[in-house]
Every structure is written in C-alpha cells, then in structure tokens.
Length: 142
Length: 142
Length: 142
Length: 142
Image (cartoon, rainbow over all chains, first blue to last red):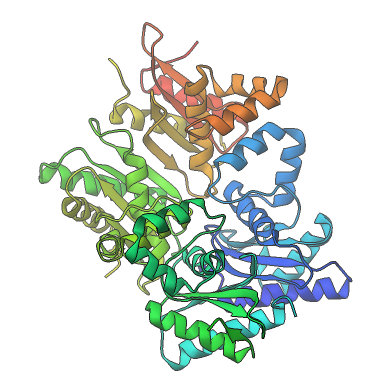
C-alpha cells in the first residue's frame, strides 16, 4: 500500500465530520493530501470562511514537509518564530503551524499522506483529524 | 439562495463522476468553488496526476474571475494570448483557459459558484461538469 | 515498493551521466524526484550553467503534475501555448515543456517519481534519462 | 580555483553522510551550491521528509547571500527578527536562519560556494557540514 485512495480520503473526511458533530464543534474543513502534499480530497462545511482550504492544506502539507505534526510546527514557531517564518517562505506549499495536521503512516512508518483540519480550536481540530484517520482504518504518525 | 452548500457540492462531484463512469472517461478531478473562487469541495479519482487540483481550480475560478466559462477563456487565449497571459499573472487564483470550468447561477442569473473538471478531453471535462450541475438540481450559466 | 531510494536515485544519475559520456553530450544536469515532485537527488556536471536545477526539476515535476512525459508537455505547448502558460503559472513546482522529463513507474504503472535531464538537445536529454532509469533497474512510463 | 567541482561536491556529501552514520544522526539531506547559491548537488537520505531540499538550500544560499554562516543568521534572527523576515522576503533563494549552512572559501578567503545540511539538530547539521567540507579537502569560512 503506497497511497491513500479517494475512497479512504472520503472516509477520513466523514469520520472527522462525525467527530465534529458529536463534539458540537464549529463548522470544519478537512483536507486529505498524498505524501507529496497534493490534494486528494477537501470538504468545507457550510458556514466556514473561505480561506479554510489554504489553512487545512498548510497544516497537512506543512507537517509532511518537515516530517512531524503541525502541532510540533506550532511548538517550533513559539520557540523559534524566525525559523518557522523562513521555512514557510521557502516551502512549496502553505505551512500552518498549529495543531490539526496529522501524518498518515503505513505499518512500517512510511508516510502515506496527511490530514489537515481547521475550524475549531487547534486541539479539537487535531482530535477530529485523528478520529477521521481511525474511522478510515488508517494509522496516524505516533 | 446565495451559495452552493457542501451537500450540493458533493452532489455535483458525484454527478460528474457518474458521467465519467458512464462515458468511460479517464480518472477525473472535480472542484466546486463558491462565488469568490474559493474551494468548497474537491475530489481526485485514483490514478489522476498530482497537479489536478490546480487545473480544476483554475478552470472554475478563472471562469468566475472573468464571468464566462473556461471554454470562452480558451477562445480568448487563442485570439489574444497576451491578454490571457496578463490576466493569469494578475489573478488571485489559477486561471486555466480550457473547457471544463462552468459557472453555476441562480434563477436570476447571479453567480453562486463554479465547477471545474479535468482529466479527459476538455470537451468531456465540460460535459461532466454540466452533468454534475444538473444532477445536483442546479443551473449552469447559459 | 512505493518510492525511489537514494541509492536508486544515485544509480539513475550515474547511468544518465554514463550515457552522456558515451554519446559525447554537453555537460548534463540530472534530477530525481519522488512522486510528489520533491527532490531526492541532483547533480550538475562541471561547465553547466546555474539555472539547470530549475530546468531539470521543471521537466521531472511538470511531467508528474500532468501525468505524462515533458516531451508531451512540449507538444501541448506547441498546440496550445496559452494552456501551458497557465498550467505553469498554477503549478506548485516549475514546469518545463521539453523532452527530458520521464516518469518512473512500478510494475502496476503507479508513479514512483521522475527523472529530469537538461544540458544537450531535448532528444538527447530524454535518451540520457531513459538510460539512467534502465541502469538503475527501474521502469519508465510507457 | 574558482568553484567547487561536482566531484568535490559529491565528496562533501559523502563526508557529511559519513559523519551522520558515525554519530548516528537522523537521515540527513545535504546540498552543495556554487558561489551564487545555485545547486551543484543534493542528496536526501531515505526517511527524510520532502521539504528538505528547501531547508538545506536555505541554509547554504542564505549564508552566501549575507556572507556569514546560517548559524550567524540564526543569531541575527533572534536579535532582529524583523530584519531577518525582510531579508528572507527579498532574497532570490530560500533563507533558513539555523546552523547547518557553511560557506566554503579558497586560500584567500574568497567564496567558492556553500554547504547546507538538515535533518538532525542544527548543531549536528553544522558538524556534518564541516565534516563534509574537510573530507573533500576544502576549507570552511573561519
């Protein structure tokens, strides 16, 4: 297994939305990218603002570019804002340093792609991303 | 009614994919944007190459930016390539001048958003876009 | 097998350079990217001009973004220069529409990455890319 | 002697990787650029994330652009983040203000190019860069 299929991507988004409904979160936007940070699927719930595709993609693709979750990028941003700013400027995709971007791995730990969620608090966005990955029967980076 | 809902956007994508399956088209990628050219939903079928989100968005958002279908943008590109090049360079979104980007309007003709399809010939991409809009019970710009 | 290893990438570059030496080509520059168009390895032979990394990457990543060789991108550019210009402006990587960018596939035809060569005529660049892929025991897109 | 040859660049990368293996560092990515900050050679070890070419290049080219190591750029970033941000936005290459980018000089101190390493801590990245330069029989900026 080398990549996330569209069917799996849709299952991830449905799972993230189910988590949002259950936890009564704000309208969410969820992206699933391949291992190169390129979009497989995206959905923005009614009422979410228009820049959500860029934020969700920046969490997912930013995580893949550096090899860690976007939560870790957020910590790096607090510790070394200049590094984060420079990395953002150099990256081929948006980079958003806040929790909600989670890498999807195979059994060996190889990157299959990533999920990015935005719309509620970063902690809740991340919980929705993890719920979506689990709902699709896939594995998040540990 | 002022905008395409996520439910309608998903119906558009499902309708476009159904058209693709029926006509045995290559793997398609379909985007639905709001009236500002911003993503509501996107799906890339398995086997489609990674640049498809940009191409689909460029058809849909390019159409909205100029107020005509991306087929019309293609005609403009043939007639006045310098204009198209300058417009592309100035636009806030990608602009792809080839059939497959269709504006969705309400009963009064006001723009609700747009659909962009890529993956097969431009003519077939446009047919899938129109089929998706019809399947969702919406109306394409005449 | 889901991606090209660094060892394979170095073998591809060595094979392309061997072809260049055998055919007495101009100094070559060769890039190998992963399936997302991101660099695994690059080498520029002495005497080659400084913009070669961008050209080689544009052949390889451009091919992957559209799903066909950069030779095919060159044909598209002749037939529809406005489409190529617009695609270039929208793509997340450089796009160079000239032969020399070849997609590497696995046994099922899935994309593993791509090779981009620049420095001699486009035909010779492509021959070197194909020689490199063969030397590494890998398979070029048919 | 006015520039780093490809043979020397490959020796630098091999030396940096040898240091990484000896010190059991994370997978490294190493770039060697000419005096203009343009790529001569790059290699990304298996397991490194996809954004590493930009980070390594940003350390090497950023160092050359300002005339000091990327460690010094990191200090500048702490002292005057606004200056670093503005410099980053204006530079023709990425600029990454963290140790690991080291300028290579000739006997007179003239710049021959630079090495950029990323993958482990910044201090370890810099140690690998210095090891690579020494392994190739070249001299780092004092």
